[in-house]
Amino acid sequence: MFIVVFFTELHAQEKPTDFLKEYFLVGAFGQFTRNLEGEVIKEDPTINYHLATYSSVQFGLVVNVYQTQYFNFKTGIIVKPKKEREEFNFTKEQTGSEFEYSYWTELSGDDTMWSVPLIAEYIVPLSKRIKWMVAPSLTLSFYQDFGGYGIHSRGPTPPATILTFNDDRSEQWFHTSAEISTGFYFLFKHFMLQPEIRYSKSFSTLKSGSYVTENYRTEPNSSTGTFTQSGDYWGVSLTVYIKKKRK
Image: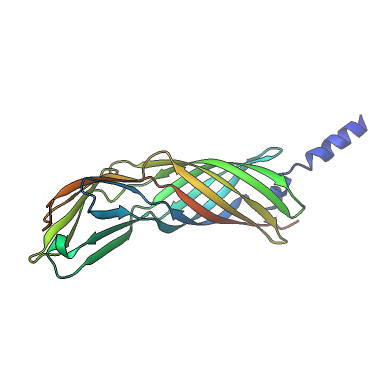
């Protein structure tokens, strides 16, 4: 009986996730993302308007909540300053101006996304200091978009409205997505690093709406179109945990 109890306790102490107990549960999270371009459906193919790819930085805190034999379940709060990049080219013929206009805007502002991930990590030890992990996750984000109409004036004299757009996501507050990531835990004397690469797939659109072009000198003088940006992205992240002091 003594031998059975001894080996049972020894096995319990050798779970692949036991190393997490040596570090504080909360880690500092930072991520660099490359967001995929959006889709623009045009009534007039000569209109050169599209939603371009853009990069953004995310940061926050993650918490290791519960561990089993090979799994680590975690959550947290991630701040995602939401950005968008639009590009629009105006030709001299379209505007009646003597100049060609190549216009782009990269917007960021008060519509920050606050995200709560639900993560399930599967951990495989490679050595005493290195652990490999793979993790599917679900994320719920809260935000309100700029919304309303955006108007850009360029070209003719006096200036005329060239582009008007409406973002129909302005009254929607939630954005949901699923992610898959893989990476490593690197254990050091005073801290632990967790670098990962990940792909995020949205269940709902991040940006969608319609636009109208007007006052062109070329035919057609006006046209309409729609746009959608999913919010899908590739990311590279790093989480830092501090080791507990031994008593």
